[in-house]
Image (tube, rainbow, N blue to C red):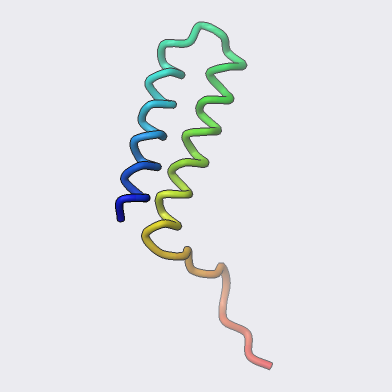
Length: 57
């Protein structure tokens, strides 16, 4: 759970930096990094469910 909090803090910091940035490319990269950290935070809590129906052999 501590790991998830760390990733959420990193995502928040990236969003703040993106809001302050005047460079559109840097803003986009920071936004992508924030999305990455948010996904890592979700995975730290538990794995994401598979998409689609379960197929059995």
